[in-house]
Amino acid sequence: TVMTQSPLSLPVTPGEPASISCRSSQSLLHTNGYNYLNWYVQKPGQSPHLLIYLGSNRASGVPDRFGGSGSGTDFTLTINRVEAEDVGVYYCMQTLQTPFTFGPGTKVDIK
Amino acid sequence: EVQLVQSGAEVKKPGESLKISCRGSGYTFASHWIGWVRQMPGKGLECMGIIFPGGSDIRYSPSFQGQVTMSADKSINTAYLQLSSLKASDTGIYYCARHLSYSGSLDAFDIWGQGTMVTVSS
Image (tube, rainbow over all chains, first blue to last red; front, side, top):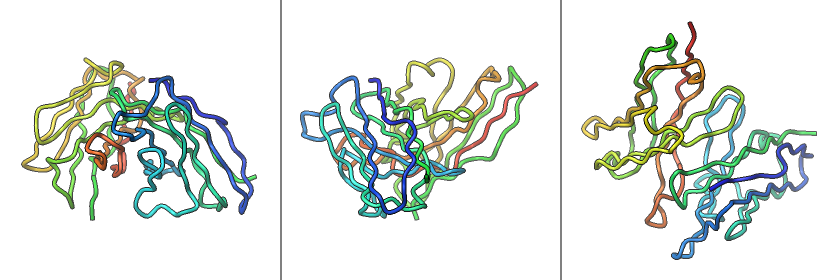
């Protein structure tokens, strides 16, 4: 399954909203009703960490300004009000079938 | 605290082999799949494969099949990634990560190790 993201670079203004799109070459909707699409952020010099799993579930400790939506092949990560600490590279990843695959990443930085 | 701790950075010569370790703590290690992810310098994330420490199930990504060997020793809560016949193109950061299972399947990598930097140079 090929994952694509847009944009690949996203300059943001603190306090403003931001969104990233992720598309998969095959539907990620399982017969159990879950979409096997996750979002991660990798901040400079750090390991990636999980933001959103199963399309729309915030991982433990993730601020509620982060939200995931979408189904099937089209997904969106939304940051309601960007903060300076949100800079990093955001990746989507599908776990519906092995091999699990990541999108190319979207680099978010401050304007 | 749930965590994965990886072995330290390695510098190797082409043709050599190495084995990276990933030790889990704070949870039942044998009950969660572990994945390995490569990040080449300045590039994105690639899933190399996954292993279930509590059994013998291993699933390699086709791009890495035959190039790496995954194993685990549940008695010491440790997973391993072995790289053989190293090439300069194997240079990168290798992460292990634990699988979350909320849906009953393999949902997401919820806990990541700190990464192991591997440099292959003559």
